[in-house]
Length: 239
Image (cartoon, rainbow, N blue to C red; front, side):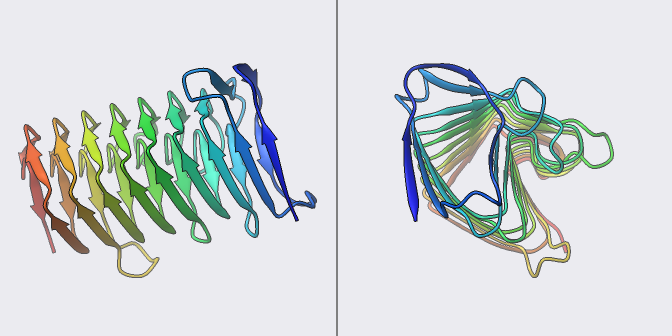
């Protein structure tokens, strides 16, 4: 069974949990637009959490001000989650991801969305300012901008399967590896990142300003510009 919930303009202080014993296996959340329908986590927990076995689609919403939800700040996904015309912004992950954590069971799709100004704060584990992925993640026409992490993946930390098409990965920063993307094998099978028809620019890192790769990487019809690092300003390919 499935439910559709329409959410009008406004700011709602909520920590949404799609978990057992919720009966509906499929849920569609439709807002009035990301600029006008805002879900504020009030730094109490994730703004949205989706458990294994649930299928959730969110359209025209902003998820902001989430925190303290290991391993995520804003959204934690263990199910099947699709974000369409959604903004995920200004969330704080105190241990791993800032914006979104897509866990090992998770299937995540972002279409026409924006993940910006999120932070992964922990000085020893902060990875994936915008997205920490150990599942399957697909980004289409999506902007990853202004995110930061302490250790790896200022924009995206990928340790599983990631595909980016028509994306803009810009103005992200990390103290360690991979200002825009870090692609790193770490126990979830060979990490594989494919980037098509995208732009990667103005990212900063200690190593690998645009991308740091030590796994499987394919980049097609993608421009790199003004990325900076001590080593590998645009791309550092390390094995």
